[in-house]
Every structure is written in C-alpha cells, then in structure tokens.
Length: 339
Ligand code: DAH
Image (cartoon, rainbow, N blue to C red; front, side, top):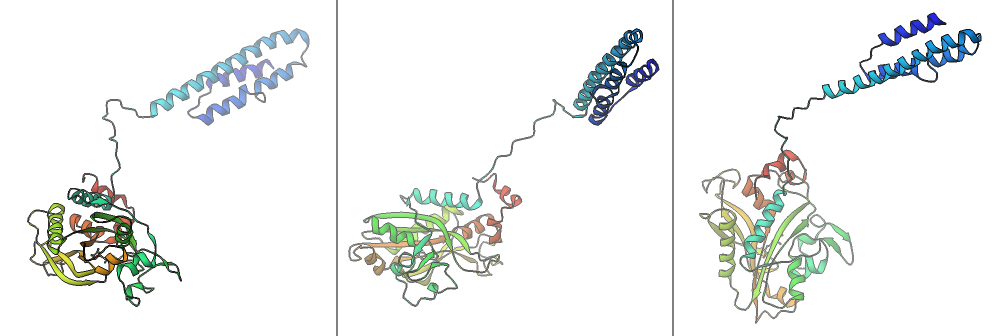
C-alpha cells in the first residue's frame, strides 16, 4: 500500500494539463470521491491498527498534494486562456456603425420639406379602401379599365373593398372633411397587381398634392411643380407639361423634367428623348369637387401625383425597383451619408 501511495504521489506531481479536459481528468482520477485517493482510504480500513497510523499520514499527504495540484492546474488554465485572448489596449476602437434611413424615406422627407415651405400640410389616408374613394368619387367611369382585376388587388367584392391603387383617395377624404382653402400633400404606399420586374412592382409609394381655393389656376400648378423640381434636383432643371388624361382632372398633364443623366442629349434612362416623366397633374375635375360637397363655381384647384421610387431613381441613379425592398445592406448602406 505504501508503494502504491508513492507511485501515485509521483504521478500527481508529474501531471500536466493544457486544457479543461486535462484538468477534469486529473480531478476524476485523484481528487473525486471515486478517485484513487478515496479508494485507498477505503482500503485502509482493512489494515491492522499499528499500520493504520503510518499509512493514514502518507495518504493524507497524498490527498493534500492532489488537492494542491488541482488548484495549480486550474490557475494555469485560467492564465493560459487569458494569454491566448489577444487584447491590445493600444488599438483604436472599432467604430460604431449607426443605421440610416431608407432611400425612399429620405426622398419622401425631402419632398415633404419642400412642400411644407410652400404652406402644404401633410395628410394621411387608409391603404385598404372602398371603391368610392379609390375610383367613383374620383370620376372614374363605371367601365374604366383600371377597375378591372389585372390592376387592382381586391380584398372583397360587392361591395368592393380594395388595396388603394393610388394616393388620390386621400384627396377625397380630405375635401370631405375640410372646407377650402385646402393645401396638402399626402405621401403613402399604393398597390397594383403587376408582375415584379426592374421597372414595375406590386407595391410602391406616391405623394399626392392638392390645392383647392378661390382662383387657383393652371399657372399656380406649373409654378409649384417647377419650384419643386428645382429644389429636388438642381437650379438649371427644365420642366415641360405634356397633355394627358386622368378622370379626376381637366385639363390633365404629365410632367417631364430634362434628363439628369445626359442633360437632355439623349440616353437609355430618357429613352433618347432628353426628358423623363416625374408626375401626373391637372386641374381638379368639377365632378370631384361636387362629390366632396365643394361648389366648383366658387372653388377651383390643382392636384398632382408623383412616384417616390421614380424620383429616388433619378436622384440617386437606382436602376432597379426591386432593390428598394430586398433589404440588401450593401445597397442600403450607400445612403448613410445622405440626409
Ligand atoms: N393617381 C395618378 C396615378 O396613380 C397620378 C395622378 C395624376 C394624381 C394626376 C393626381 C393627378 O392627383 O392630378 O397614376
């Protein structure tokens, strides 16, 4: 037995461990209740009393040595882990990256800012809408193609509940509530049943504008949108009005600006015309005013609607609509420095 104790003593003092598992193995083999030392204490019970004293002392020494060794091994392991963790306090800190607003939010905010300075309020309306607000009140005839299934997402049929196809619904909701003068812009999300591609999406964003008062004329519309284009893009921008048709305006126009990419010389973006479309607009149709309880003999107004994706595309040269909703950080981070 004495010999066995001596061998164990040597084993204990020679033991080395480089990792957690090694230290644990040592504990199990020598220190734990099922380890070699406890086993020997068990065996000691059978010894004659005169040997018990001597062996008992040796065994106690072994026990203490094993416990002390375990403490040393644990300490070594800790300092080893600390040493392998590279901490260089002289290095500059990793800079904090802050989030940034989405490009569409940036442009929407800029549009609001420009029109607020002209005295426009911001108004809001529902995205789930009845046929009346999205179509009928806006003077869409009963059989107009925009009411058909391929353009509109219907939530319910008869009576029709749908996802609004444009922000023009807010014109009606506003004019119903508020007597002229009304001067507001209405940003929001709209939905159309279209196949998703680089140029079309099933949801996008618009900003509607409306000014109804006494003696509002086409010249006011022209000047307002000219001012907007100069503020949004740059001072030398040119603007043109092309005759068009919308059920809710008469006369109606589409608004083009001179192409920012080629300065009017002709390129892919403007399809070699030198002009790109940014909005639809016109004088509010008398039927629309009547539908909202406003007397068209007393009040006139202009309205416009523009696509936020389109303006963002022109401002930041984004060439694919899908990028806006893919949440790709490589795309989104490019707008970090833009306000
Ligand atoms: N609602 C039209 C669209 O989605 C855009 C529009 C055109 C709005 C002319 C207007 C307007 O207010 O006067 O295509």
